[in-house]
Amino acid sequence: GNSVTQMEGPVTLSEEAFLTINCTYTATGYPSLFWYVQYPGEGLQLLLKATKADDKGSNKGFEATYRKETTSFHLEKGSVQVSDSAVYFCALSDGGYNKLIFGAGTRLAVHP
Amino acid sequence: EAGVAQSPRYKIIEKRQSVAFWCNPISGHATLYWYQQILGQGPKLLIQFQNNGVVDDSQLPKDRFSAERLKGVDSTLKIQPAKLEDSAVYLCASSPATGLAPGTGELFFGEGSRLTVL
Image: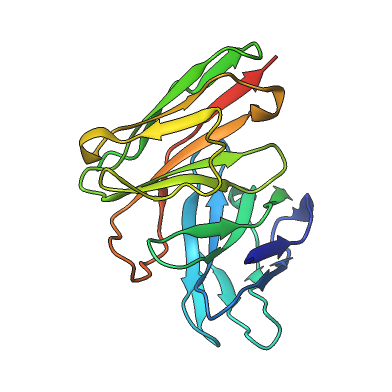
């Protein structure tokens, strides 16, 4: 079945460092891909998405490109801030009705 | 706009007891989801409703879990009897998406209900 694999955390960075969180997927067909973020004490919220190959999703300085050839959707940010500390989940759509399959999540901790 | 409301936020019970979680989705959202998030894992879909009909409950352990969405608005998830492995955060989410066509993928999540089974 469809699945998502994320790099294990935690990822610990200093402020202004470059961030990459790897995500690869297994799917039949051409799913849409998403990154969700969970800040401390809050619910998950959509960060960005891409619906077809070579699409780039972006939001709040984060970017991810849908790479069909490598079945990847890595999350990047050029300069992280302390406020980016959160858990990041990669997900893919599985059929209709907005059904999502999530990866295990990667915790990011950014220090001043 | 009010978000997805869930209660209780925390619940501690002993194994073999029962527990119920309540969810009030965003007004007007047709689709409602219950996810289970075990510590260190990503959310796993338990059941998905569109209005008051079940779209997908293939991963719901039906011998102990039940869920309903009366009148297509609020929803309740029940566990009876609880097992140790049911300790998790139960997330409710809603989406305006309807029909079989893939939606935007944006689900709106509540803060979750954390269950500890002793």
